[in-house]
Length: 178
Image (cartoon, rainbow, N blue to C red; front, side):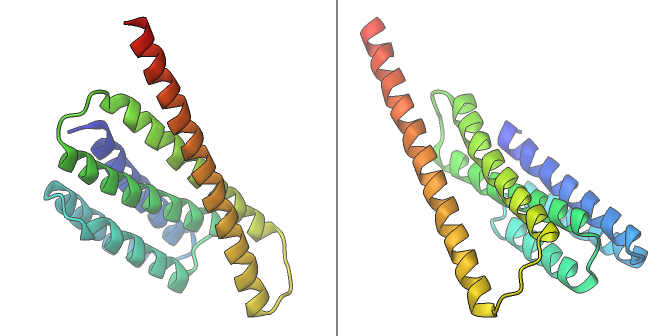
């Protein structure tokens, strides 16, 4: 089992634990067992490298959060864990398709850096949204969300371009040294 797969499974566990704690805290203890069963099914799906498992987990736990409304801290934590699980599982499947890599650890660290930045920014914006109240129409909120999404996309695109540039410079330096 490689590092990406282990981290994906740890993210699944963290997401399930956060969701279960949120349900217990909100008085919906009856849903802890189904969350555990769904997480176990996620483990079975990961064992078979199924592409649908992370997506199903994310949609199910997000829907449960919307219906049951656990504490926002636990809901956001669970959603962040589910997103990490979804992303790392897809990354692991892509790595498996590629086959042999020269430096898989470096690739994983780069991916984790971008994932951590995206999750931290998303969680920060989520918690900020809980603290700030803005009265707006749906169209205004949709426009604000689209602007935030475009800004985040541009930020991640620039970070990826910078990382690629550093990799090219590093490869050029290695060729000159050999």
